[in-house]
Length: 189
Image 1 (cartoon, rainbow, N blue to C red):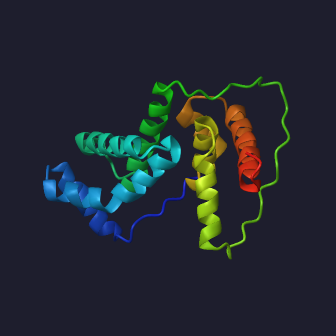
Image 2 (cartoon, one colour; image 1 turned 90 degrees about the horizontal axis):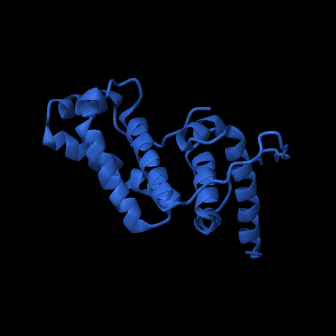
């Protein structure tokens, strides 16, 4: 499963043109791309690091890196996918700097996995906000895996690659994080 991105309504042709102009050094095009993606990328980082100031710093660093390396961008993916990968990697690196570790598990140990729940599309806005607020209360390791899996749409193989851990570790972190999330939602914190 590839990540699903909520791209802003920009025609692909215009989008490709903006990137091409950025590659030529056009500052106005840099600004337009930043304006189109900054909010979504800030939210992506915030869901991982759970700190507004750190998320703002990561956002700035990610765009600086993206614009510094824009000439290497080859349109094999969307600019949104490319910048999101940079933001996620920088967010995870920030957690690692703070020595927030994901505990490796014994590869031979078996864990039961829950069947994925069927999502009721009639969820109200307040229920969604309650879940997002509860995810923020998870420990950084759980929050990162739960956010990447549920909110960003990455599968466990991709999360394992991003985080540099075994796929079984991300599955276990997800299961434990989901259990903790349910406790938080039930008020058992």
